[in-house]
Image (cartoon, rainbow, N blue to C red; front, side, top):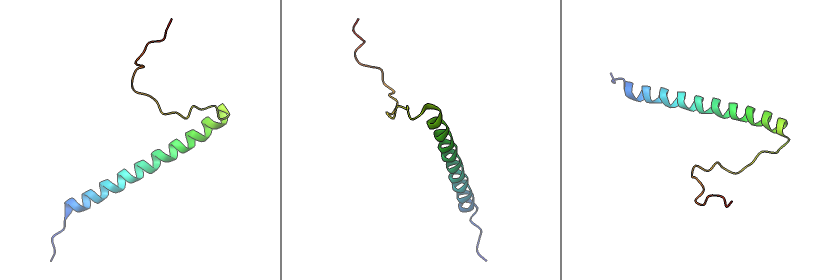
Length: 60
């Protein structure tokens, strides 16, 4: 009789859980995005956020 590969089964369960969580996260983002679009009438900045500070301070 073949020995059960518990580590493989566990890995498959973990991957399935991760996949479901990702789908849920995407559904939430999709729902949030449609509500934001209606509230702001499409006035959303599509540029990605910048993690770095500006190299030059504003002149003044």
